[in-house]
Length: 430
Image 1 (tube, helix red, strand yellow):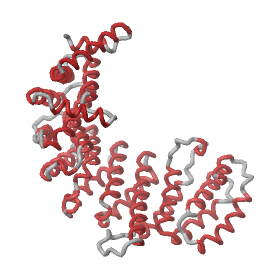
Image 2 (cartoon, rainbow, N blue to C red; image 1 turned 180 degrees about the vertical axis):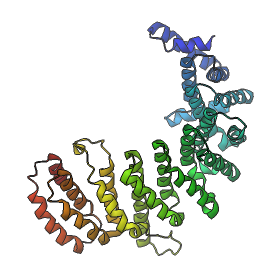
Image 3 (cartoon, rainbow, N blue to C red; image 1 turned 90 degrees about the vertical axis):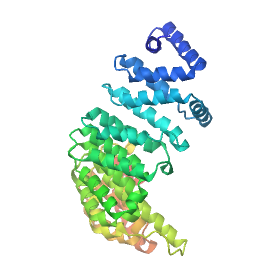
Image 4 (tube, rainbow, N blue to C red; image 1 turned 30 degrees about the horizontal axis):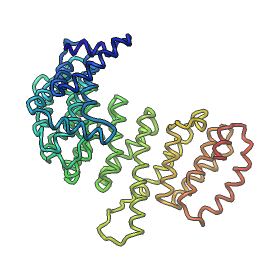
């Protein structure tokens, strides 16, 4: 049975050929699962085979290890566990070889399948040399950029697939070392650096003890902050995504780095591409959510061991609020009509609302001058920004602080209800 021809026929526009090939694949799978999976892994690893057959081999292999339905997934796991160990070893070796393939699709699929197998085996204390083998790809002399990229993607996927408790600390340390080296500016390939930042994002949950160590934590934070000013937009965005995750997972360790992070986020919000700016705002929204949660915990508990609330939002307030108010002036036409729209002005407004809930009355004197200055300007964006800002801070401050503002606000809202710009009317009514 020529697996290459069957895989190609399964993608044929000829319905009869396709149906027959699908039947052959199913028969092979049911009659000899071990050899079926081995054949697929060999097909995927062979650079002389057509890209189309390799792509389908990878898809079928991945779908033979994982499923969305939990019962089906458990069945597939048990099927893999019960395979002959020597066959499993051959499949895994083929997959590791494929990471060095000249074909990008094959490399990426292989990294995903490696992670699926790791998610089954590592919790069972199997494939214990996987991390070491992956790391050797990063350190071997003359390792190609595509091999390093695929290896970092595999490390990232492995960290995404398995719970943190299943990696030994020495393995976590080795992964972080490899990832940080991949992020270094001395790495000439931007694809490798991007894969490294994404791998770090997935590895952050494993780094609890590393973040508890000041020297290691500071080194990791410096590398991320340096990466946040890379010349490639995607890499900057990925670095800010790491900062957002750290804000949520390691809030308690952030204090020494907040001035640097503020400067990075301020520059991104003011002048970077929107995908980067959105993540910069998301960092502050995440800090708000953490501090709101801490305030709620304090109110319901007298536990002296509670996490310290560093009041980062309160400290940054005089600079943070003006920065976010500026984002409100960057609305897009008809954004209110698009349910899927998410842009910097909407993100900034959401963050202002979270800040209002975090600091309460303190936000009011910082926002109201902006509202008063913009509500009567001829540019509809200014008027829209004023009403958006006003509406954003209504949940958080005390009734005593809000009552006179709401009364005054009703006047100017009613006066501008006849605004010729439909977007502004929609904003007020909404």
